[in-house]
Image 1: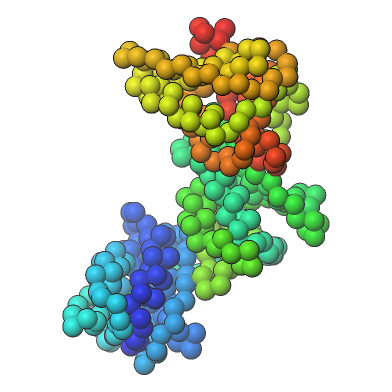
Image 2: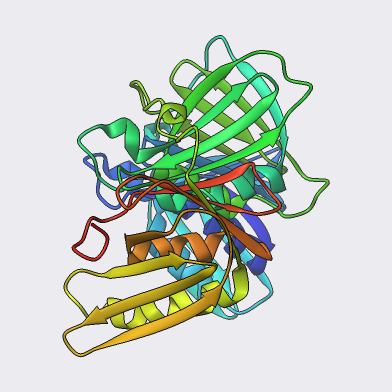
Amino acid sequence: MRFKCNASALIEGLQIVVRALPSRTTNPVLEGVLIECGPEGVILTCSDERITIITRIDAEILEDGRGVVPGKLFNEVVRRLSEGDIDITMNERFMFTVRGSGSRTNIAGQDGDLYPNLPRLENERELSLPQDMLKDMIQKTEFAIAVEDMREVLTGGLLEIENGDITMVGLDGFRMAVRRHKLGEVTENFSAVIPGRALSDIGKLLSDAPEAFASLSFGGNKLHIRLEKTEIYVILLEGNYIKYRQILPSSFATRVVVEAAPFKRAVDRAALMAREGNNNLLVLKINAGEMAIESRSEIGDVFEKLEVQQDGGDVNIAFNVKYLIDVVRYIDAEQLVLNLNNAISPCIIQPADDMDYIHLVLPVRTAVTR
């Protein structure tokens, strides 16, 4: 195998695929990058058996072949080369030689035939989505996905297609984020739970360009995503996802509209003190068209006051500071709407101009809110 390519192109390709390198594995060949040279150019592949990422780079192919080179080391070697052309060869003993910028590095590799075959999908259902739409859905829900849970299905995000809508849901038992878009041309209904780590990697590979599309194929317990030069295979999580619609309250006693920018600044300031304490709490006191935001710890306290539009009764309610910070970080709007019932019922927070983005946050019961 031998090929020549631009250093920046190879670095870019490696940055895409090494996201799928396993942190630990019992199969040593998965610690490497599979490099294949052929008519389609140079194809790079990494996999941890839960997610497989493949990308193609343009190169001058001097000799076809395939082999596996240690992923982390190869990535670091290439990153340290100057811009310009790189010449990479692999001999019959799978020894890789990297030449560029007057440098030569030899790296022992492995036979490409040892690398696992790509996953195969059966009874595929295919869907085409704008990449910026899918990226928006991932970014606005992935933070709410459980990192660890006895119910493995909750460590993934639910992608649901129903009645012409596409919805993504993340929840961890304390909060929930729901993002919905219209897909009027899609008539069939189905759902899949995508592992949280895979969602994060997918989101980073998606384009913001409105003309860029992603093709998603679902088959059995697998998902195949095709982008322009990159393909992603994901093993989906199995199990029954929580019926999230049943968690959402159907009515509210109090509706509050607050200007987003001053609310974000006030929450951010109050959070500094809340994090110094043992309980990490922010208390919202909504009374007669005003919202007080309070936090305290052993070394001090913070008091913030904002004017709000209030429809309904007064409410005192407390939240874990982390969850409220996440709300203000991910909602981009001029005004926020807080829908509440009482101090111990879930609070629904949404952008005032976008009812298809929903945050549900469970409150913390305290002596102040009883």
